[in-house]
Image (cartoon, rainbow, N blue to C red; front, side, top):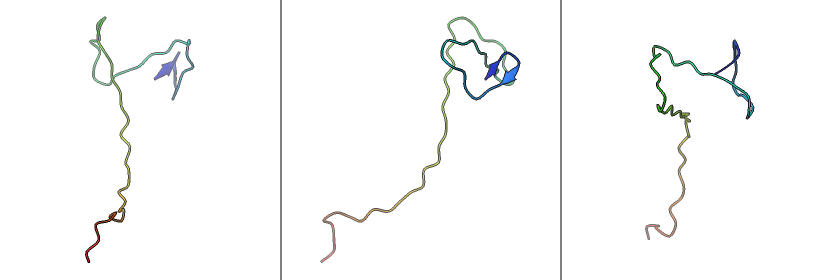
Length: 54
């Protein structure tokens, strides 16, 4: 993400910015750019509810 020539993490609403996609320069009107963030979530064990052995 860039604001003028500076790399930025965010840009306020209403201000111009641009993006660069490494090894790709063939964007056309109507193309859609989708982004996502991968987030690692640690697994946890929860006790069984009402499923005890008796």
